[in-house]
Image 1: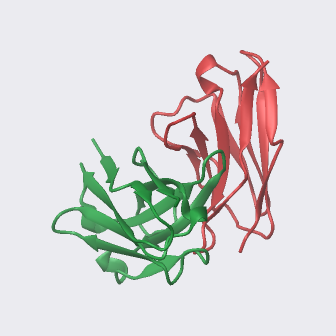
Image 2: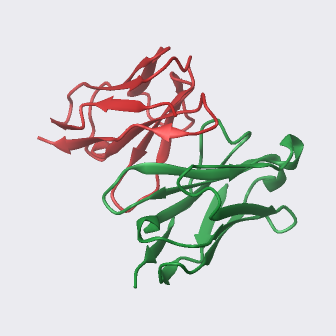
Length: 107
Length: 121
């Protein structure tokens, strides 16, 4: 299985900060990488697909980049509603795998 | 509006069975693969498996942790996907989510609200 590793596992930041979360795949996955946001008690929400495409309805402060094995999710200016857990997910292999999650907390 | 609603969760003893349903609306159900994921309490997301659309053969794929115990099926006439869970173990305790995508190996949107399965004696 393709292993996905996110860093950091947790992050404290303030409203207005620029935040970057990294996801690394154990092998090349081209651009088959998606990002989700999950708030406590809620289902995951798709933010970015195919590494850099913004899902409809998602604010433009979210962006994704990368290809091969290294990917990033950037939030350009944190808003109060962005404090949540973020997961990367590879769709290169039939066996879908996720990163362990990055918990974004208010500083 | 695309909606997915899971049902059928509850408390079940180890070794017993449970069937979850995912009722879809707002899109042409038969055109999509339907996937199941789960999230154990306080843990991350885990893929369970998916069933392809008829156009892609209607075949299934499963995670190693559930293969041979869980079965995914679909009823396109009712727009429902099922997750039959047999020989349940305590480690199957989780919130189970269904979602959709064109092939089973793309990006998943939207997700249902989830249904909690607790396996305990």
